[in-house]
Image 1 (tube, rainbow, N blue to C red):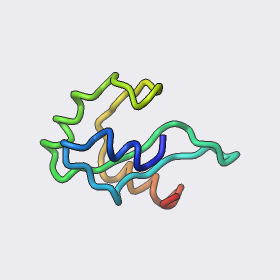
Image 2: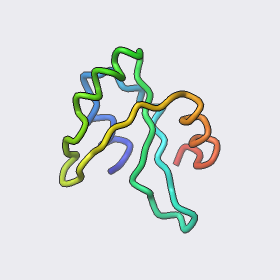
Image 3: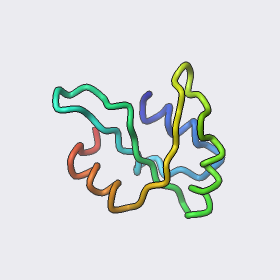
Length: 80
C-alpha cells in the first residue's frame, strides 16, 4: 500500500498525512508495516474500528503505538 492508500483508508478519523512512515527491510523491500499519527488520541482509538479490514486486497491489522516508536521509524527509514 502507498502512503496515499493508507491516508485514504483512515479518512474520517483525522489522520495526519505528513506523519505516515513506511518501514523497509535491509534489502530495501517494504515490510508491510507503517506508522500514522492522528489529530487526537480519541481519533486513534476510533480508527481501531478498522482493525482487520482491507485496503484493496490487503488484510490490515492495527496496533496502538506511540510517538517514540514512530520517531524511531522516521529516523531509520526517513520519509520515503
